[in-house]
Image 1: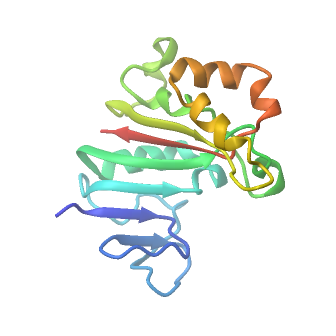
Image 2: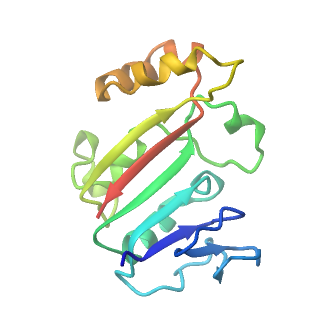
Image 3: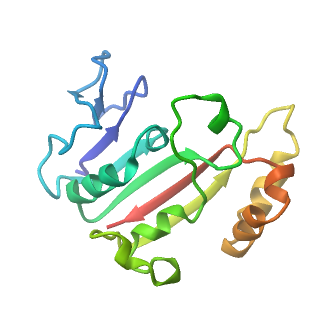
Length: 179
C-alpha cells in the first residue's frame, strides 16, 4: 500500500493519508510547523507527497529539500502554487514567492541552462505540469484558453513570455516531481 503525506493539509483531510498541519484541526494526524525542519519523518518514508497552496507562503527551498529527503526513490511530490500572473499573488499578503511553470525544473537533474549545480538535491524529472485557469461563467473563455496553453511546453513557454499571460491570467500551476 502506498504511503501518502498531505503536507499543510488545513481542512483538506484525506482518508488513508498522513495529514500534517500546523493547526490541531480534527483529522490532522501530525501537528507540525513546516517552517521547523527536519519534518518528523525518516528518510524515504513516502511514495507520494501532496503539497497544495503552501510553498508560496514560505522560503520553500529548504522545505523542498526536506520533501526530497522523506520521499522514496521513484516517489512523486505533487505541488500546486499560484501562477505568477494570478491575482491571488497580490491579494494575499502572506504570499512570499511567485512561480512559473518551469520554476521547479531547477530542482531536477536536467535543470534549465545547465544550472543543476544550484542545489545539492535533485529530483529525477518533472513528470507532469499544467497551468490552471479559473473557470466560471465570468471567466468562460478560460475553458478554451486552458487546453490551448497546455497543448505542450512550447505553448506554455509562449504563454508565459508573451502578452497572453497578461490578457488571460492563470490561477495555479500544478507540477509533479519524481525522485
